[in-house]
Length: 302
Image 1 (cartoon, rainbow, N blue to C red):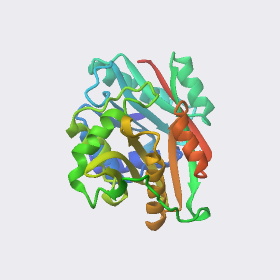
Image 2 (image 1 turned 30 degrees about the vertical axis):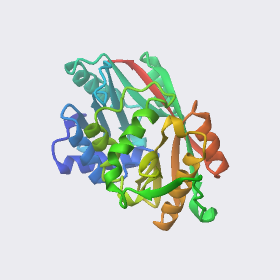
Image 3 (image 1 turned 180 degrees about the horizontal axis):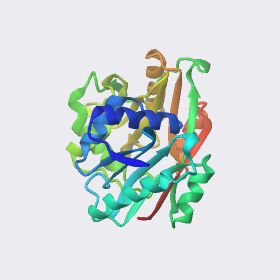
Image 4 (image 1 turned 45 degrees about the horizontal axis):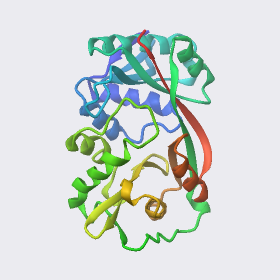
């Protein structure tokens, strides 16, 4: 076994290939993986090679948004044919060593519910569940083009049409993200940090970023991520506190479905915190069906 720090595009292509093989949804694009690496100088990405073949991939970074939590964010992937051979443990130790150099004491790692071995591995090492995502899928060919129907006084526009609304959207994020029922290592951060992580990733295209306007004020927004193989992913759907309960979120969701169908996507995937009952109810009403779930674990360094 040899663990290699990713330092060039050739190694990153191998990293992406492992993730695309091992993960349920894979990496949306090589360009997005490269962009994420550039967001944080303290982030480290690794590939593990066995007899020269890339069979494992991992990353670790500090918490985002300027959080002072001593908990890093990490992920580990192993090709299915190479699991239970110590590949994950070797990468976990490497991630832990870098986390120590950053002054971190814990790691937050997500594992698919269906991967019982991965969940058991983390639990044996003292990791505890701190959150759970329910993933839902909407097969776009099976649903009609929706009518968006925003509530009275609300109009829906795209970021492509109104790029000047980003400061208003940030104010929505400052209310919507902290209200999500999840124990999470990341915070919203500054406007520049939010823009870099939540808005300007290559997969967040402006024509699929929808904004709810009341007059000239943005009171909500929703973002779609472009995935691979005809799949699009919901990112945050957020509404300012004073405007919730009026149908704005459902109008934004319908705009996303319509936009995805028009763009030629075949499947929409959303990830909901299990405790977020309102958005889960909305997705069920719109025809989303349960898919794979994921558990967020937090635990000590190795």
